[in-house]
Length: 226
Image (tube, rainbow, N blue to C red; front, side, top):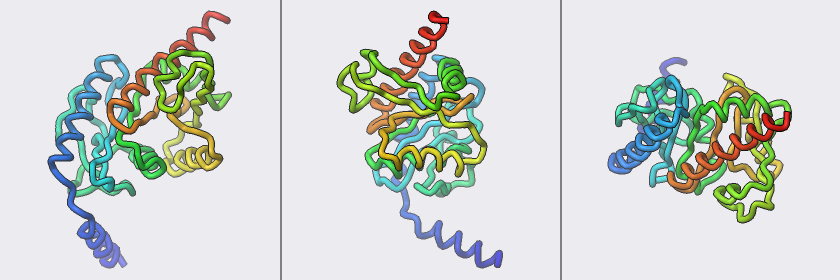
């Protein structure tokens, strides 16, 4: 039984198409550049947060290795997984939340980058709005920074999902939201942080920066009206 499982795993790994090392290097450099910027802003305390980019072949994802300082990432701190969370050509361990990244790449095939941060603003907002299950953004001019939103008169809902260490449970909640047909540009995890993405690293970074600002505005409104 064990031998058969090992043989099956080896056959699976051998069947994987090789990824282009130049593509990997380009993605790793872009991830490290973004991570240094976010770390300087205080959005990746301790070894929190994780970042990824879909490689040009569409079947592989460059993603941060678990437990690394995001302000000091090098090429050895980034690895490759396939779209089903399997490490490719490495024994390193990806982030425990890799499944949340690959889920987005599978559900949104044009996504090229997924960013997850733990800023104070995001973490506090996730707790404050956790009972409501969403942050509803309306009337803010900066909503137009989110792709698909062209006016402040639109409504942008950012769901807040309950936190769990069991990734299948969390991915099932995200799938359930998407299966209703509701748009999803980002989400918070209660007591945790923010996930957002884009069709390029630049777009994903723009979404992250805009949502950080908008969540801060909502927290200020709650504080000032209390």
